[in-house]
Image 1 (tube, rainbow over the protein chains, first blue to last red):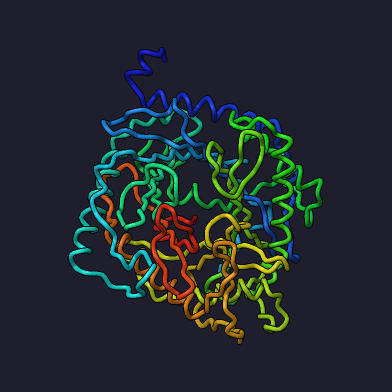
Image 2: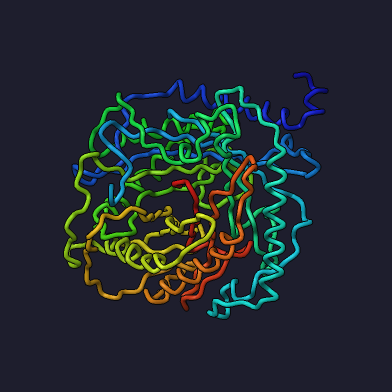
Length: 96
Length: 403
C-alpha cells in the first residue's frame, strides 16, 4: 500500500505497523525454538509449574496516534503467545 | 510457542464519557456500607451503559483483515476512577479500576476455526516432542528465558539483551523459591491456586522493574500449574502443623474465597477467578502486597464449575491467623474475617458492572471479561482502586472464557 492509501485508511496503516513488528518477533521465536523445555518447578510426580504464556505489551508510539471512526484512539498493543502442554500433562483442575 | 494471538489494546482518549461519579462508599476509604443511593445508581448506570454502548458501536465498525496468519482476537479497554470518584476511560498512566476484554465472536469472521471464544484463552493441547525433566537448573532456566529476551529485543524497544537476560533469570529463580512452598499447599476446594504471573517492566537498557517508570515494555510471564492426565488429584489433606507458613497462607486464601460462592451474577457472567499480589518478608514468608513496589508476583485462584456429586470438602482446622499486608513499606495485619468482608464487598461492586453488561447479538466483539481492581484497607474495607491508588485484590467476572 502506498503512503497516500495508508493515509486514507488509518486502520490499514496500524495493521501494517503491527505486522512489521510481529514478523520480527516471530522470526526470533523460530530462531530460538527448542524441543527441550522442562518445567520450572516440579513439586512431585503429579504436578508441576510450566511457563505457558508470555504477554508483551508495548506502549504506543507517536506513529500509532491516529484517528479512526471519528474517535481519537491511542492504541497500546499486546502480543500473547501460548504454549501447549507437554504430552501427558494438562492444566490443573480440582475436578475432571 | 505454537499459538500466537494478538491483542490490540485501545485506550480511548475521548473525555465525553466522563459524566458520573461512583458512590463514595465504593472508594472504600471511610464507610464499610455496601449500599448506595438510588440517585447515585441511576447516574452511574446511565453513564456506564453509555460507555459500553459507545465501545460496542465503535468496535463493530472495525475493518478487519483476516487474510493473515495472525488476527485481531480481542480489544481491551480500561476504566479509571479519579480520587474523588469520577468515573471514565483511562486516558493516561495510573491504575485502572476496571478492565474490559472484548473478544471477537465466533461466526463473525472468515477465520471461524481460529476465532473460538474459548480457544485463545485456554489451550489444553499437547506438544508431543517436548522433553520433560524435573526441576530446572540455572542452565535450563537460561534456555527457557532466552526466547523471551529475544522477543523483547526483536520488538525494537530493548537494546541490551544480555542485561535483560540476566535480570530475567534472577526473577525466574526467585519464582522457583516461591512456588516450592505454594506447591505444597493442599487443594481442599473449591478454590485453588492455578497459576503464577510475573509482571515486569523492561527498559530499553534491559533493566527490569516491578513498576512502570515511563518508556518501557510490559512483560508478563505466566507459569501454570499442570498435572499428569491420569493423576488422582483429590489428595488427602495434610495436617495443619505439617504445612509450611506459605502453604498455610495459600490454603487460608483459598478457604476465604469460599465466601464468593454465594455471589450470583447475571448475563452469564461467573465469578470464578481471583488474583492477588504477593510479596515476601525477609524470612521468605508470603504476604499480601498492596501496590506493585513490593510485589514479587501475582497468584491466581480459580474455582471449577463442575463438582462431583456426593463430594465432601476436606477441612483443615487452621488457626485464625491474620494475613500480613505490606502497605507503604510497612507490614500491617488484616484479619481473616475482614478479608472475607472485603471479598464480599468487592464482588458486590463487580456485580453492578456485570449485571448491566448485556451484549447485542449482532455485535462483532463481545465483552467476556470484566476485571475489577480493588484497594484493600486493613479495616476490611475495600474500594475500586483510584488512579493513584494501589491494587490489592483483583476479581474477574468472565463469561465463556478461562483466563
